[in-house]
Length: 324
Ligand SMILES: Cc1cc2nc3c(=O)[nH]c(=O)nc-3n(C[C@H](O)[C@H](O)[C@H](O)COP(=O)(O)OP(=O)(O)OC[C@H]3O[C@@H](n4cnc5c(N)ncnc54)[C@H](O)[C@@H]3O)c2cc1C
Image 1 (cartoon, rainbow, N blue to C red):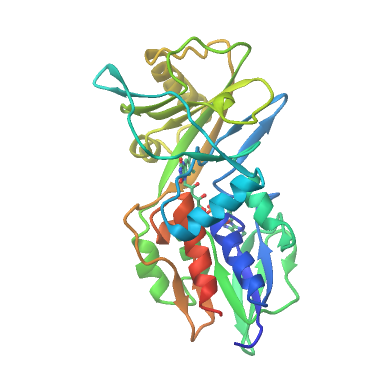
Image 2 (spheres, rainbow, N blue to C red):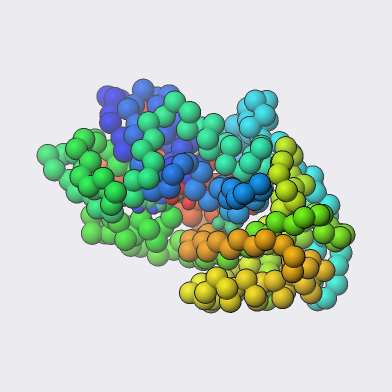
């Protein structure tokens, strides 16, 4: 295949794995990312003297290709196993969570694998792509921060959540509406708490089957975490979706009241709340990726491939392999 110039919108794990593979195949790739750095939903929130992973909490690896990638990350200390004491809270009762799954986390923060993949790539950060156009067989991008991007690209890849891809590109490709319509993405309210001392609770992580909270984890129990004691609490996707427009103050009050019933009293803690508008999608999505060769347009992301970190990485990798 002739070497192409390819623009990728979104530097989450899908966009990054796609970019790495395309570069290996000899193409010229440029990433455009609206945040200040890569990682997307594998991010870590840094505060004064403390930090907490506020998106993906850990990931698993089942596909042989992703297992190989994880082995490399483990070898270069980008990633490590996390083996917390996990409990389950259901019907007002606690039990121990039994699972053979190996759980991996980035070290020293969840965004490290993304930063590792981004090394050597051309990444334009703080560039929100808000308009796309085609002229003379090339794609042109417009950024909210920088205006028109002068350079044209042979191919365009959208590595952003389905609803955002719909807004950006539905007028360009009629299939996008149908495909993104199946993404079923829900929001997630995430609360991070910084404590002076380690709270006295009998777990380091917990799956909670309750109306408001679905997950609690001691961020400080993850490998290589430094800084003050921090915990991450995530709200149930259905509750989050229903109350996604609530004020942060109200969400904090409701989530903390619920955390207290689980034995985690955050009264003295410093609290930071984050609203994810598009946190997780369908875990049954099997399309893998989307490619429209006639339009020179592709899409990848977790929402096309099982809704998790592993699915995002594989989605980007397999889309890129179409350009071999
Ligand atoms: C709260 C939460 C908890 C989670 N827990 C887990 C877990 O425990 N295990 C697990 O495996 N997965 C988990 N996930 C899911 C996991 O984080 C995602 O599956 C994965 O990170 C998605 O990667 P992606 O590249 O597909 O998308 P993203 O990471 O969303 O990447 C898309 C990127 O595109 C950028 N972008 C969007 N629009 C534009 C635009 N117009 N212009 C430029 N840039 C743009 C975004 O800033 C973002 O960086 C969780 C997610 C959340 C939010």
